[in-house]
Image (cartoon, helix red, strand yellow):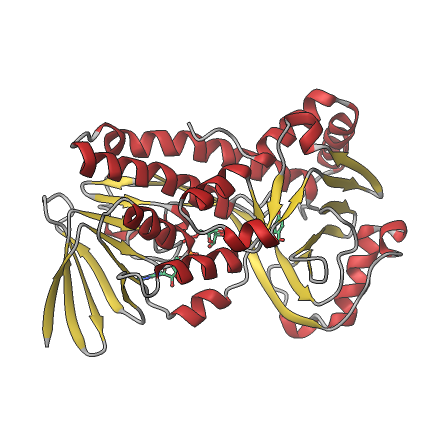
Length: 394
Ligand code: APR
Ligand code: PHB
């Protein structure tokens, strides 16, 4: 059996990018169809980072999905960088007048699903063989299989929000697309635990045994990470081994406050910097992880995705409301200018805070000197702070 559906915007991917776009367009009276190769429960179960810039919080408020975020999100006015046992607080509020909000990406995704379900939003889950076509035509199409049926969605625009492993980016001809990548020679081993956080703010630590991060989800739930080898297996990381390693890397003073317990989530993630140019081809627009990846140091992945969607939804709304395409035409250029700056910050913080296997003694001294400079200079601390709280949209 085969069927054709018509809509204004076909959104490939129901992660935070796709869902926020669907919600923002719906608020402006623009019709969309969202499809994903997984189902809602799977998507909501993915554990990701948990720090929102003020601009991201504002976007979620504007989209009408912030009631739980505003009740449960924890405002943070600063965080610590630690190097070889010395802790330096980056006073976000004092240096920039802004703060960040700790609220898990999992919760953002749940709030967006809650807002779209039962609101006339068309969803197709567990789809297969997704194939965008006719990208340069005025009515591009997305073809896919769903519950044994061949479906074609005919639309005005396709939003490629299908993450790093999606098909949208691959639909752009190879002679048009440029990609830039850096893969880091280590991963992050992360756990969630039902214990109060070791500190009331986040601590990013560089210790000679490797990086560690103390983060949180609430006053009773903590999220911890340690740098591990890319080839490490979860089987080799018992909770006891994890806690021992984390305590060493945080140092004795901090570790004295560490409340350990059984982890209820444990995973290893590789670190990657990746950018695609351009982020538009014909009537296909890329947003979020489909177009760019940052290493998690600095928690910019979700924030970048939300910034893309703020610009893309503004451009689409302008097109439908007034026939003005100027922001659609400048979307890729405008977004990429900001993306590269955020890539730079995530790369800089990753370089500063990790132990690199190939580093020479000279490079180790450079890292130490950079930390000492940040810790002794308000200008350098302010540069870190203004990136951490979020750069302007354009
Ligand atoms: N067809 C349909 N859906 C797909 C396909 C495909 N071929 N490939 C991937 N998807 C879906 C995935 O199942 C996922 O639900 O696209 C969605 C992409 O979601 P994310 O990977 O979360 O990407 P994005 O919405 O851009 O969110 C960016 O999430 O990945 C984190 O660190 C990232 O925090 C950042 C944020
Ligand atoms: C998290 O809480 O998962 C987190 C926080 C900050 C980061 C990365 C991840 O930089």
